[in-house]
Image 1 (cartoon, one colour):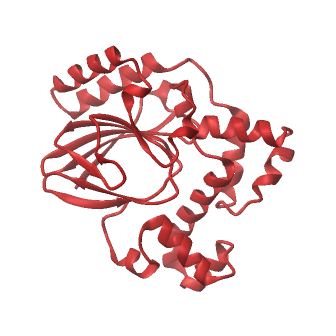
Image 2: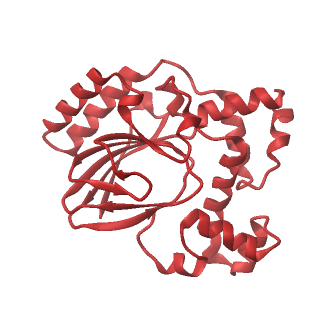
Length: 253
C-alpha cells in the first residue's frame, strides 16, 4: 500500500487536514481505527469492500465511529481521501453530521447529483493524481459555505485534546459559558459526534500512540482506567483486537 499526502490550498486549510491518495498494487486488507475526522473518499480505480458496508460507492462520506472496521482493497485500487479537520466538514455540508456516526453514506446524499456526476467525469479524465487532487479541491471550493470555524466548538475540541480525552465532558459548557443542551447540539452538529463520544475516541487514540513507552497496566491507568479488564474490553472494541494481537499486526492506520 502506498499513501501520498497533499497539502490543501490555503483557503481550505482551516477546514481540511490533508488530502491523500491511497494506492494498492496488490489485494490486501487493513484495519482502520476510529479517528476524530470525517472523511470524504473518491474511488479512482479498483474496488474497496468495508466490513460494515460491503462494496463502497464511488464517492462516499465516512462518519466518526467508536469501533474499528476492516477494508479490503482489490489489486490495482486507488482512492482519493479528503480528511477534514475535527470541526471542518460543517463548512461544506448542511446535513446533520452526527447522523453519520458509525456509518458510511454515498456522497450523493449530501451533494447535488448533477454536481457529483460532473465531478466523477472530470476525475475519470484526470491525467495524474496531482490533477485529481486539484479537481477535488475546486469541487470543495464550490461547496464551501464561506463560513468560519465555530470558535466555541474549536475551543472545546482543543480542551479535550489537551487532556488526551481524560476530561469531565459535563464541565465544558460551564467553562464555555453555554447551556449543556445548546453545547451538545452545537458540538455534534459541527464534529459529527457527541462530546462524550469524541472524548472517548481521543482518549483511546492517545493511549495507543503512547502505549509503547510503558507497560499495559501503566497505559490503562494513565488513560483513566482502574480496571484492566475494562480497559482491554474497550481496547478490543476500538481496535478489533486485544492489545497483544493489535501491536503484533502491521496494517492499521
